[in-house]
Image 1 (cartoon, rainbow, N blue to C red):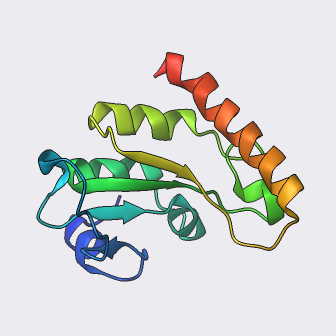
Image 2: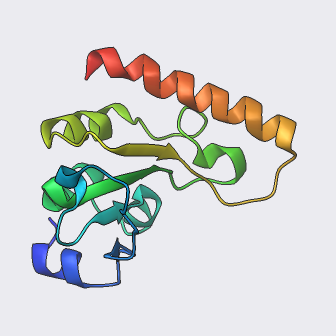
Length: 130
């Protein structure tokens, strides 16, 4: 169980609040404190990603589709995490903003392009189930 106050105010889970420049977004996206969420950091602490999504609720503007793994395994559809429960939680919270495949590392562009295409297809494949 995640303590909501600690989650929303603590840096332990590496949430970036209010740092996202949302000029140019529709007015309904301009929440008081827009949040970005990176599951990688939650997984590192064995914290439930779905619960974190629900805690963020309507303040969640950007979801990094990034899992705790090595190399290309950080991307959706490449590593061990099942993204379906995360996408279901995002849908239940009516999050209609950004779900962005993400990873750290330096890989040749051709390899990265192919890996991101696989991630995109994986996430799109889950969308009908959500």
